[in-house]
Every structure is written in structure tokens, then in C-alpha cells.
Image 1 (cartoon, rainbow, N blue to C red):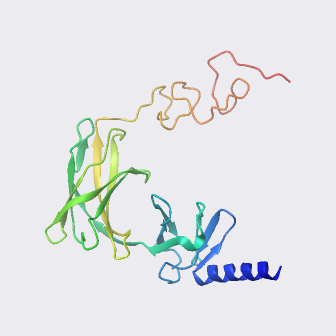
Image 2: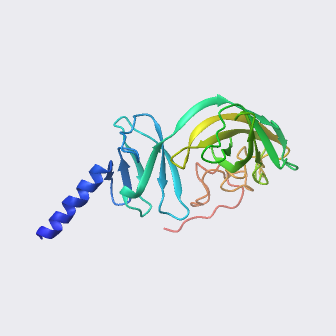
Image 3: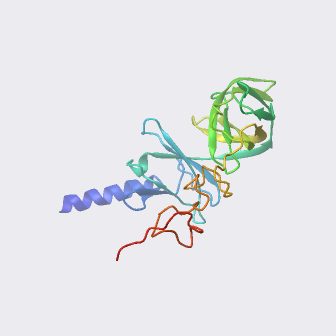
Amino acid sequence: MKKILLLVLVSALLLLLSGCKAAGLNSCTRTATGAGQPLIPGATYLVIYQYLNPPLFRNRVANANGEISVPSEGQPCTSLFVTLVTNSNQSLSASPSSVYLPSPPSTATVTGQSFDTTYGMPRVDYFDGNGYLVGSAYATSVWGGGTALQASVPDMSYVYSGTYQVKVTNKTYEGYYSHIVGSATMTTWGRDRPDSDGDGWYDDQDCSPYDPYLNTDCSGSCGGGSNYGPPYEVPTFCEY
């Protein structure tokens, strides 16, 4: 019993010394970076599950107490590496700035400043209007003293017409992409989001894209209901 108690105490001490504490069976709470620096409330941090193959990355904002919580993903809390994400918030330019989706270019050029190749080529990420990542590519060349780069355009076969954010991130001395340089705007056209049943909900949002009376609730309870609109088929009735 004494040996078990000693083991528990040692484990708890290791967690505290590493700036990490358990937050339930399936999550971890971190209070310090991998370098042992206390987390800054309101700052954004990159959490790296470095022992997963491939590694998993998550962004988290520290709360008012200087803490971030993440799922453990089956990893020991002490194995998670945490580093501060910095953002220079520069306004960049993308060329082409407008892309015809049925025939997109193979490469794009981004101009600005502070593109750094010291630790690796910058990464170029494409985000849609809702902030979802569409695709990523690494710069193939950087020139002009870090004022211009070229990178492949990711697969756009599933991208719809709209406005996208092209974000450039540098790799830092820690070996991770945690320095955001800035972003540019790119518009796309030639492939509108379909609304097959014309109910105002796009097919990728609609739980029943070919039924104009169903959109957000497709549970099918007892022949329609307040969430269904008027049923256009003979309703089915539940047996008591």
C-alpha cells in the first residue's frame, strides 16, 4: 500500500513540474509551454502530440487562468509539446487573386514580407469563409529577401465559389509552424454551392438535400412535425 501511495505522489509531482495536470481521464490541462514558460491568458498556443504517427496539431487559446485543455488522445499529458503562436498580421497579396474553379492554376504567388526559410519553407494554408482548412502547400521558392513566394495550389475540385483566406506561416527554431506572417484574400468562381431542392439550405448543410420540407431535422418522427414543414407525403403514424 505504501509503495502504491508513493508511486501516485511521484506521478503527481512530475505532472506539476512539467506544467501539466490531468483534467479527467481523457483530457489534459497545460499551464506552461514546452520551454516551461507560464501560459499567457488570451494568447494562442500550438499543441503538438509529438508521439502520434503522424503528429497531431491543435490550436488553443489560454483562458483567464493561463490554462489550456485538450483531449489526451491516449497520450501522457507530459508528452504534449506546447508553444506560443505568434501572428504578425501582415496584409499579403495573392496572385492570381481570382481563380476559375473548373480550370484552376497549378501555382500561386504570394507577396508581402518576412517570409523566412531559415528553418524550412513557409507553409501556405487556404481557409474558406467559415474558417475551415481547405488545403495546404509548402512554398517551393522564396525570393526578394523574403518578400515573395511561390507554392502549389491545393486540390480545388471540392471547393465552391466564394472568398478564401490564404495564410502564410513560418517554421520556427522549435521545428513547428507557429509564426503566422499574415494572410491574403483569394476569390473563386465557376462552381456555386448546390441547393438541389431550393429550400435555401445548401446540399452540404441540408440533412435531406432533395426534399424541400426537410433541412435541419431528418429524424423522421411520426409523419412530420414543427421542424419539418408541411409533409408532402402521406404521414406515417406511430403505434402506441
